[in-house]
Image (cartoon, rainbow, N blue to C red; front, side, top):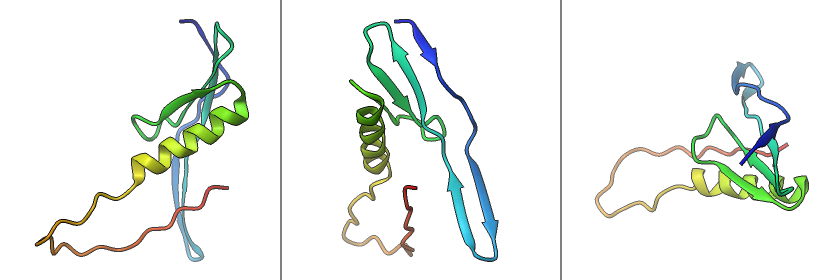
Length: 89
């Protein structure tokens, strides 16, 4: 399957007085059948496809959310937890 790469950038983490941000990049490619492939290289396993770039973007954001979903807390697990909220721009 031949793919045409549109962009490739590395993720960055920024910390400032006003807060912290994590910059990730969605990489889009189009395969020979016209499918739009989307991935987030900074998060292994987050990749998907769609018939359009918009659909591929929606799907890759769903894949990211699934990959980052917390595992259920098991009985007896007393590790300290802190909520982390990420906002998609």
